[in-house]
Amino acid sequence: MAASAGHLRPGRYLALFALIVIVLYALVFLTGNHKPTPKLGIDLQGGTRVTLTARTPDGGQPTRESLNQARQIIERRVNGIGVSGTEVLLDGNNVVITVPGEQGDQAKNLGKTAKLGFRKVVANATQPVVPPQTTTPPATSTPPTSGAPSSSAPPASSSAPPSSPAAGGGGAAGAPAQQQSSTPAPPSSSTTPPPSSSQAPAPTDGSVDAKTAQEIQAAKALRQNKDLIGPDGQPNQELLAKAMASLTCAPNAKDPLEGNDDPKLPLVACGDHDTYKYLLEPEFLPGTEIADATSGYDQQRGQWVVNLSFKSEGTKIWADFTSKNVNQQAAFVLDTQVVSAPNIQVAILDGNTQITGKFTQSEAKDLSDILKYGSLPLSFASSDATTVSATLGLASLQAGLIAGGIGLLVVFIYCLFYYRLLGVLTILSLALSGALVFAVLVLLGRWIGYTLDLAGIAGLIIAIGITADSFVIYFERLKDEIREGRTFRSAVPRGWVRARRTILASDAVSFLAAAILYVIAVGDVQGFAFTLGMSTVLDLVVVYLVTHPLVAMVSTSKNAFLSNPRHLGLGAVQQVGSRKKSTSVGRANVKEA
Image (cartoon, rainbow, N blue to C red; front, side, top):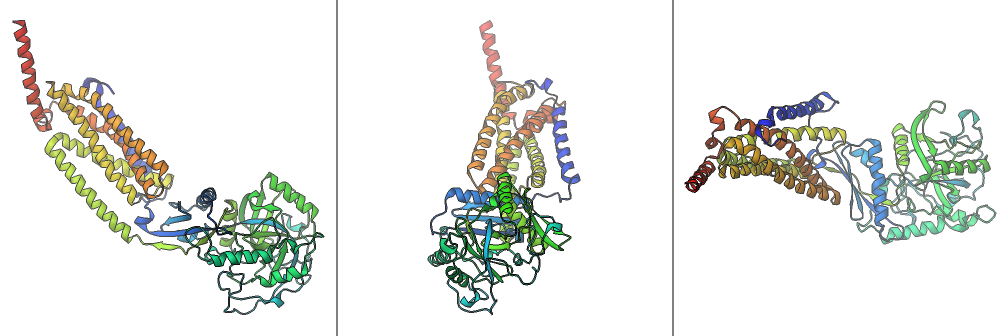
């Protein structure tokens, strides 16, 4: 900026600021199908909060690395399903998901373990579904709705049941529909993935309770015994009968191995609407090799399916497996449940694979989203989604706004009393700064999903003081110049040159503090730091493009009222300056004499 009022041309700066405001509000009102209001956080508009507690099979503490990885995967799931305004934070060994507004139902699936693996089917057997029982089988952590007595596990065959064809289809493991064989296969999946909400509660310290840990170890000893499959690849019938007898396949029954199974060991698992039990080889292909997953409607089958594509290494493994195991079954195991167990009809070289089952549209979409955005490295005990009322937040907001309004009023009164017309310029600048901040908040909510919460509002209120402080620095510099004997008109450019350095240094320190706080903090503190830093930047815009040009226009005004120092709160310092100037002139005359 020019150092003299004559070269300033304040009208250009004011026109530039007006253009910025017009563009911002044009974007606010003319773009998108959104209301011209900022997005509000969960504390202001209510919403849902889900707390996921990490579980480890051995009862130990989960590592910080695995917790951070889980948080990042859940964040990717959030972004993938388009849940706006959601926060995913670590609170000790818990992952806390907050969803503002009425999108809470989508948060319930975000913490599913989604541990997908591909295993070869060694044997399977049917099991009768018996009426619900009141006692809890030793292998479950919650009372199931039905149980399976030991007689439900007859000696298993190494081939698929030869009876009726699959209702719902075993699914084509990547083969075109016209290449599928009509060889009967066990039905492929359950109607829905195992719900996370049925998991047993776990302590908040990140470990499982003693009872759950015992159940996990007992289930592993029976259902993941390395001797279940002999060296010849055939099942050990005695061990298999015991393992299948211990397994309860019933709707909503909790599997203690969910998220805790060992992929390097065989597995006895449920599948097909809880009517089939499977003996599976160790995992030959992990779900982490999935490159993409989408849901769609298969017109030929008349059902919703999930389509998978693999990464390069996964494609090679899958192609090698399907080439060597034609007419064998491959099980897609999701969280220890067989989702689909299709027969391999042809070698699948391109990796394109399809999971079929009696999925609804939403179930297929949920499953594809979970698989697409990664498997969690930990299993979690999920509390039920808790609805958060906005009543308390709105009451706090109202109290905060009243306090902020009172503080702003006090600032206005002080400015008018101490600076008079300059105080009016201060009030006008603050009003324009508020208009600028509002438009930016609305647009940030649309563009990056930023949500305004109570902490953010606190940052905005504190920023009022930072903005007012910039005005005070400028006006006090003007007083210093006038006190030295200069006129108001000549004091403005000189005072601005000295003031802007101080203003820049002050705002730089404030912005740096806000930036550091934003980087190292989480949650509400981040929201406070964000609005504080943003307001600090906008303060510079207002001071440079509004406040200084307005003061310069007043200093060059031909209106005697506006340019009169007394009306600007500068009368006292002008008298001091006049006396100092008179004294200097008198001394100069004495020296000349």
